[in-house]
Image 1 (spheres, rainbow, N blue to C red):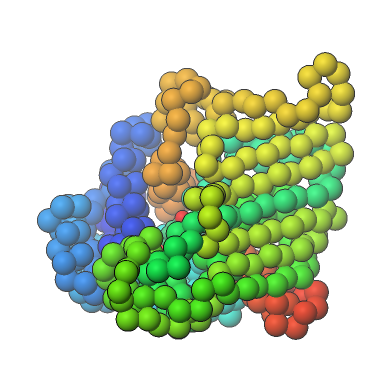
Image 2 (image 1 turned 60 degrees about the vertical axis):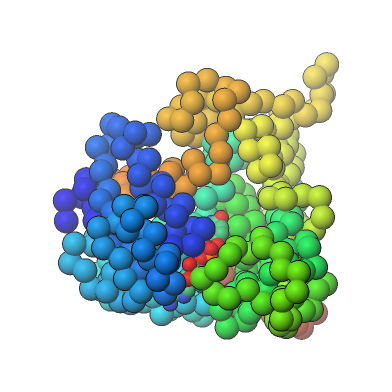
Length: 392
Ligand SMILES: NC(=O)c1ccc[n+]([C@@H]2O[C@H](COP(=O)([O-])OP(=O)(O)OC[C@H]3O[C@@H](n4cnc5c(N)ncnc54)[C@H](O)[C@@H]3O)[C@@H](O)[C@H]2O)c1
């Protein structure tokens, strides 16, 4: 492999598959100094029209309906795995066994045991991994992480974090693969709380113990065929199918470092749309951020004085990778830009450079929290989160 010109394979050409592709395409212009020039080589989707779109519109040299052809392609060096979650176990292990570095979407696998299998396969093969935890790359989030690590908020005492999404707030919202146990595993718990858990782990530290509950508000929805539409679709007169997992989940958590907190996720909430946010409170200050105002950060450093309370600051060139996208504050970055940062961290690690990417071990640790939360929702008891032995 020419590390600066890696051949890219793509598995699944849905929302995330297209977004990973745009991220690879943006790298040369956003980070010209890195000299990275990914080549779009081979894409797969079981929906033939989506595979054709990857070749004819996105610009992959080859397209197929069988992902195994992507993994067998000698010109493919790195693979983006953007398939429905229930397929990650099979495809992630196959990618590792084919010796391909992979960037895989969250949640990685349906539960902790599937994620552990993928982590073990990646460690055995010695491939580089990255996970679709895009929100951690938001410049304001990176800045809060630095504030916490530098002790600017004092000792962290408590955390509130939520992912309130409205993608299924409409009762006739489509029954996509996300609502089926075999294809998704958990509902809001896996799909949305995994982002929350990654964010608070990234900023505050590991979670040691969890007590949770889940609820399902809409038990039937109109069926959406695989490979069509999106999970935001509303179907007026469709055939109804059973919702098999949770619409809402809440968790009380204890962090290993002593802080406590509440985490919540909903996919049916009315009001917030992509409301992933956190409030982090310490003995000397606090910080609050929400993706719906991604470029704003509310901070309070110190207790009193004439400016007591939160100050709102705009993301700027001192925060994370902001300067690569905009020359000054006030020109907002967006969701897609976070994926460009993620692609950069992945390919820099593949090329043997700085390892700032999230890895399969992060995904495994997040999955242990999610699985502990699922156990707690069943048992009604606090559940410990097993420590992950890192595969490397
Ligand atoms: N990081 C994020 O913010 C984020 C956002 C959305 C989705 N995701 C994750 O990304 C993954 C994909 O979600 P999405 O929203 O892009 O899904 P999607 O429904 O838009 O697309 C899924 C695609 O997979 C294809 N597919 C199904 N079976 C296949 C197979 N055997 N081989 C190849 N392709 C197959 C379908 O035809 C479809 O085109 C999921 O794991 C999801 O949780 C992450």
